[in-house]
Amino acid sequence: MKYDVVVIGAGPAGAMASKYASQNGASTLLIEEHASIGSPVQCTGLVSTAALGECEVGEGSYVLAKMKGAFVYAPDCEELCIRGKDVKAYVIDRKMFDRTLVERSLDEGTDLLLRTRFTGLGKGKISVISEGEKKEIHSSIIIGADGIQSSVGRAAGISRCKKFLSGIQLEAPYTAKDPQYVEIFTGNDVAPGFFAWAVPFSGMARIGLAKNQDDVSPLQCLEKLMSHPVVASRYKGSRTEYVLGGIPLGPPDKTIKDNVLLAGDAAGQVKPTSGGGVYMGAVCAKIAGEVAARASRDEASLAEYEKGWRKAVGRELSIGMRIHKSLGKLGDDGLNELVAYLNQPEIRDIITEYGDMDHPSVLMQKLVMEGDKKKLIKLLGTAFRTLF
Ligand SMILES: Cc1cc2nc3c(=O)[nH]c(=O)nc-3n(C[C@H](O)[C@H](O)[C@H](O)COP(=O)(O)OP(=O)(O)OC[C@H]3O[C@@H](n4cnc5c(N)ncnc54)[C@H](O)[C@@H]3O)c2cc1C
Image (cartoon, rainbow, N blue to C red; front, side):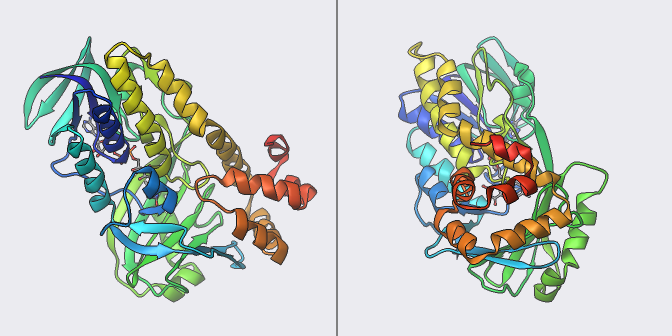
């Protein structure tokens, strides 16, 4: 087998990268170790309206619910309501969504091999185990879109992401306060260093959290979340669909090496403020596919990819990382104070107007300009002073 571009991993990043490689004239193969696309699911499936646009799909049958805003709960249970005028995000069925993206790539001419696991890198080729058989596939360019563990990144000698969060989630019957609002819970009991959520759809919710890696197990935090007074009052008993997964934050200094480039979670292209990777992964994977196709014809160097994706999302990522670090340092008292501050009517108006789940830096800039700078610096640390 011989291809211009081989893409490893058929998640959203792999689907978009292979689609763009095919569209740009490269013979492209997409390989996936599992027998079906999008499984097992390791995601809440909350994506912004912009993310669907970036993935070049509309409101398909994978949309389970539409979200207009969020209730954010401080550790002391003070409720901050962020009200959107329009639909801001969708709750999607990731399995169906991933399949749709892969189908779009196949429409552009990509070949797909399921049950095919990448096992090693050679000169101008990769080794795989396909349907239980060892094989070699020759390729000019290799795109590793193989998620958080990225064996492609490891084989190429690309360093790992800066930080990893542990995520855990279950699905359960749930009577949300408003089925068009996501619920966010903060506090060191339920989600040390990050946050927890209940994302409603069809009388159910995906209830989960992501946390810093430390001594407390994600399962212990999930049990505390289930007995959180707000969650406990809305949770209707019985649990289905446990999900356990990691979230990479902070891309390595280089995401290319020789004829290999990484995209999506493999490259840490994930929003550090929310842990969402679908939007950023798609933005970067499209650049990866396009550059890889040209590089396979010696019309581009892979450095164009490194430069291109950092230009597209690098600033948002580095501001996001600083916001993440500042928020992670707040104890429960600090979080209570922050939510109380944001809950003032004039600040809530700014959040409603400028809040954008894919570009939190826009809101932060507005808050710094129009809010109480001293208070923000006190709450979010001096790192905040250097943000802008
Ligand atoms: C609990 C949790 C909740 C989340 N919620 C959200 C959310 O609401 N919104 C959001 O935007 N993001 C969310 N994320 C993050 C999101 O799931 C990822 O950022 C996204 O799936 C990354 O896409 P990807 O294509 O880079 O990688 P993946 O979706 O991980 O796809 C990688 C693919 O590569 C395949 N693969 C791996 N190794 C090999 C190999 N050796 N050979 C062949 N194939 C291989 C895998 O089977 C997989 O199909 C969440 C993550 C977690 C853990």
